[in-house]
Image (cartoon, rainbow, N blue to C red):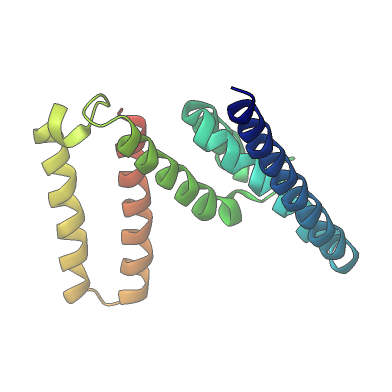
Amino acid sequence: MFAEARSRLDTELRTAAAVASATTGVALLLGALTVYSPKMAVGLVLGAAFVVVAVWRLPVAIAAFIVMTLPEHLPGSFGAGDTLAKPVGALILLAWVGYLFVHRGQVPLLPRDHPLFFWGITVFLLLGGVSALWATDVSQTRHDLGRFLQVAALLLVVSG
């Protein structure tokens, strides 16, 4: 009985020591990064916080994404909408995929619940990709298609 309690205590102490060591290492690296570039360090901390929020509560992360990227053209905005949209959108998509793996079969999916709408969007994206064959400016077509793909991915996430 005492051996089992001692074994559990040893495991908890090892876990606490590992967490303390990892936290100390991250704090040292963050401190070194802050000396080099404070702006990058703040961005890293905010990015890590966003990842935690996206994994913990996906709807809150989606709301934060909308607040960050929607008012990019309004007066008084920070102008960070374009630079934040892609990485934040990718983080939200990855968090959603993780959520799908954890809650298999319990999450509403656009292809399963609304197949006609899903295939309509898919055909629209395929037509946009094929239109690059006869476009006069392929780079503009590629840019627009990339934006349509991002919107379609976000639609998959928010439809559930």
